[in-house]
Amino acid sequence: MNGFGRLVLVELSRLVHRRAALVLVAACLIVPTIIGVVLVLDTRPPSAAAVAEAERMVEQDRQNPQLEKDVASCIAEPQNWGVDPSVEDADEIEEYCRVSMEPQLDWYLYDSQLEIASERDSGSGIAITLLLSMAMMLLGTTFTGHDWASGSVSNQLLFEPRRTRVWCAKALVVGGVAALLAGVVLTTYWLAIGAVASARDRLGDGVLLDCLQMGWRAAAVAGVAALLGFALTMLFRSTVATLGILFGIALAGGIVLGILGFEGRWNPAYNVAAVVSDGVEYYAEVDCSPQQAEEMGEEMGYGYCSEERTLTFAQGAGYLGTAVLATGLGSLLWFRRRDVP
Image (tube, rainbow, N blue to C red; front, side, top):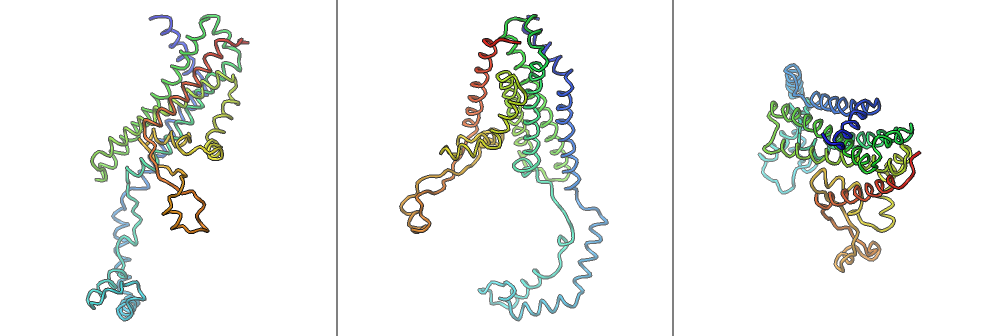
């Protein structure tokens, strides 16, 4: 094994023996497991006892004399009960009234179906992606932040004075571990949820593959988040400063860009979403056409309208890649030239 390979193994050993890193890894394993278990339990089919009780209540309410009174009132004055005025046939009116008023089984059953596509697009899949990305960003930050706080960087450079190799070894370990861990967690999660959905006959064709691909893209984003946290910490040599900058960008970056006149194309959140979801729709402010201005009228016509646009995966990946590459190069150059205490 060459010198760089041994250096990578040393950095990997240091990472897995860091207690803060182990806590973050444990959180990335435990929290998705809890989310998955809760999701499966909340969407389980109703029991036989629950169905029997619901059927009993349906039959009981159908025997209620008030039901026939309401149906008769609906037939007598159908428009007051929401019947379409164009419906004039007496049999159709009676059928509508009975169907809309007679108790149905699903009225008495809470049956939340497991929709794996919804979980991928706006449910637990997005929540786990955010969790993993934030945890891996913290992993990259705390891993190298501890080295600067303890002064061990100078000791490391005594054994390996070539700073570029040291920086690259750390970056490779942080980014690789983050992407691999996120990939394993998300793949396992979607396979487990897919197995449950298949057992309940709720899995459509190709949906599981789409979920797995979404998970792999999210794993790449988690690796990028770890690299970004690492590079900024190597640049500022402070965990607190790095976290402040990153969370400031996450919370206020889009607002500041909007104030400065930049459209959603340059919003970090939209670009991350474009990578994870393989494209995302957003609204941009554009000049109104004469027809739109005329339709809005003089009072509402301020000259700007909204236009729906698409931010593709390639655009989002290019945005994130450029940001990480620029930050990484700046961090590496600063690390090579600046004195190490």
